[in-house]
Length: 117
Image (cartoon, rainbow, N blue to C red; front, side, top):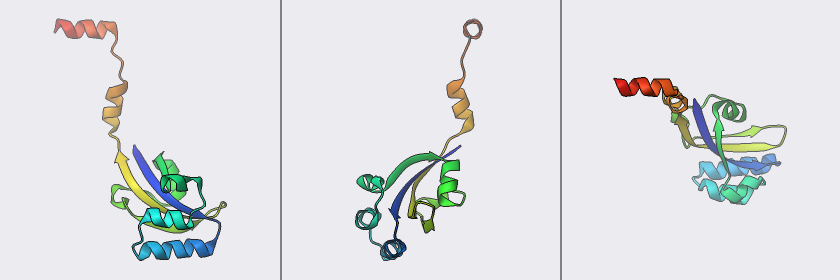
């Protein structure tokens, strides 16, 4: 299972979205671009949207996200809400086997049997 952490610049204005992307391409720090152009409440956290499952990231970003995408800037992407410029800030791949181990429950009988071995 993949977990993705992303930040965004969000605006209703295509002009601001284009200006924000140009600023990022000119290597202005992402948090400064968020402060200058974003109208999203996530602006208070530097644009951080937090962790999301792979499916949510896919619908937001429009493409599969892998570890190689870390720090990649995507957009502007138009949605019904406005214009988004996204930065993939982190990607975690959770090992399903380790997740299974964490959720296994040992019955009292299994515990007793393991003690006898």
